[in-house]
Length: 178
Image (cartoon, rainbow, N blue to C red; front, side, top):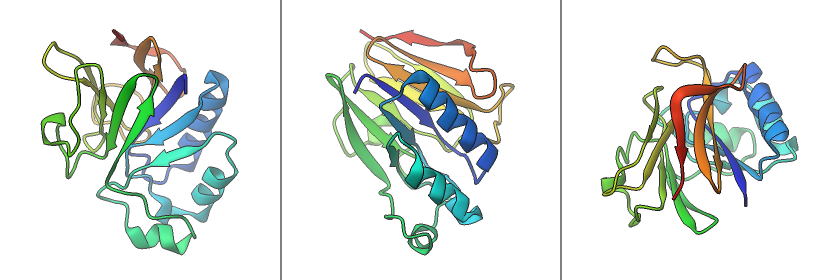
């Protein structure tokens, strides 16, 4: 994998999911990661969009995602967290309600790894000498900060958080990977 698109907290917004898929295709993403609160219970259209998308989805369950909602649309129930291998890095993907920080992660993360969470609806992109890269892509539908709905792009060289509608990088949300 060379490029990932990451989003969280869609809460059933079909139009935003369409835009995320379109952005993912434009970015030539290898995979689309959802850090929970997909909102699949709002519509079977979301399940259909995920099934028919040419780019594979990797999904974890958020606090608003009932396991039964996935069963009802004949989709596998996503886990609370999972590990994704990306280049020479490990990514821990979770929603953030049950595993709120990388320190509480069930997997050991190095300073070169990436901890991805959602839940707060606020974009975060941080890194220090003592922590892995920490990414919250913000909310794909209901941001709780001054930014528009957002998503993130991870490449082998950098991580950025971008506005879904314009695609522009949100000021201050670009980090080069070491």
